[in-house]
Image (cartoon, rainbow, N blue to C red):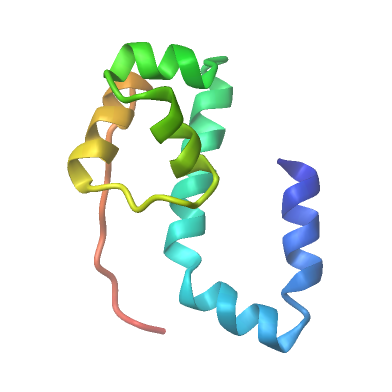
Length: 93
């Protein structure tokens, strides 16, 4: 993920990219958190699917940003990753 983070940081210097990034930042945060947690647990998508009962293809779609998970799905993923889902509403900067 280091290369991806470097790439994103470089792209954020582009005004149009930055505007689009900010529009969908929460989705990217969820995707990165899911991938990072899965990799830290040394799980393949197939292993995570077995733990959560979520189809591996659906996990792939989530990780590729082509799906919008429900809170219930995020809770199932968190449980399978031995983690807790935390959602916050915070004031704008």
